Image (tube, rainbow, N blue to C red; front, side):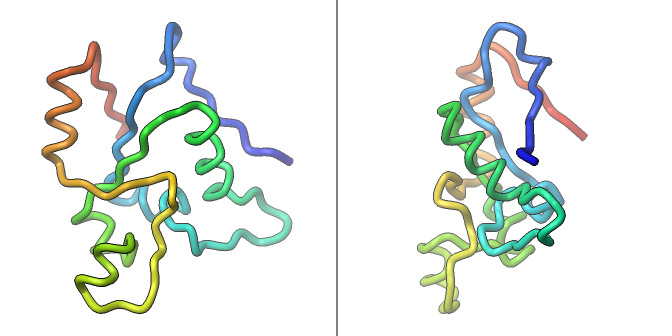
Length: 112
């Protein structure tokens, strides 16, 4: 069964950027190392494919990601950790990027 993501709230166009914060990062959305049981949809892989197929920038809040063990290459090297766990389709950034995106966007939608 293929996972389907519904963004009906965007009737005219998909968002250009999605910022992942807090627990959304840990629900298998930014972590490339998560493995779903065989009888479940791999949400992490489906989310990654959805972002790539729709040209949506995915940004993980750096403080939320680090607190949950999600590392990109730079943070892994900086903290002298052994691996990278952030999806290649997602980059890490601070909340300044959210502020910049909000200033230059038509709308800002928050969930949760």
